[in-house]
Amino acid sequence: NIPNDLFNGRQRIYHTGSGQVCLEGCASKEETVMLEGDWINVENRLGVRKIYGSDHLAIRRPGRRQIIMFKGSDAAGERAGGSLYCDEICSPCITDRRAYEADTLLFDSGFVFRVGNTDRALLTQPLESRSDDLKAVRVQGADGKTYLIAANFGTVEQEVVMPMVKGQRLACLNGQEKGEGPVLVSGGAMRVFVLA
Image (cartoon, rainbow, N blue to C red; front, side, top):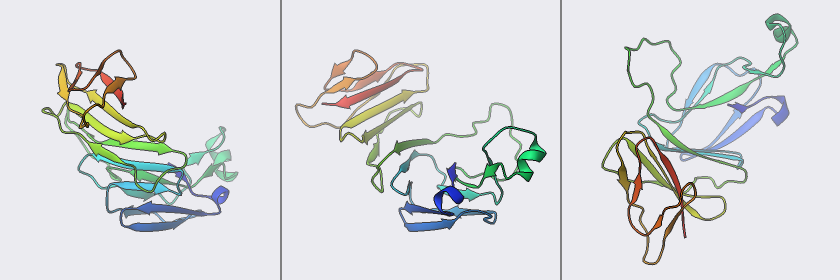
């Protein structure tokens, strides 16, 4: 949710892979703005990049106030203008009610976020694995260092290979592992490495 109301001058600027989008806030009409590419940057303060998933990024604008600023009775909150308009960055963007069978996979998407002073596009690279259960990404942090983030959603140990040049090593930030070769991630585990 990205507030787009009187506190930001009723205007929010988004940078995307297909150019700049300027959206007026307050009393906006209901609409969905479909975006090209796999990243969006909110005024160099928040960066979002899609790592995997088949759906496009979109900005959903419900056309009503949806951020509650204080608690109270619903009627009093509505009369007092107790909420703000906001734009919603979505992927997928589903606006209708749908029925799903039991055990249906509803979402399988991955994103990288960076808060603070951000580049227009985050430098990321999804890494290949032998199983759909293992999701891994190489990403450049705000500190300029390169990180490997790997999550194993399966039950058996999986291997991921991080492209490195000779002499580079991976140091695990949430465990003791260090090494120059493939990284092993146990079933149900997540590992974060920094390239040294």
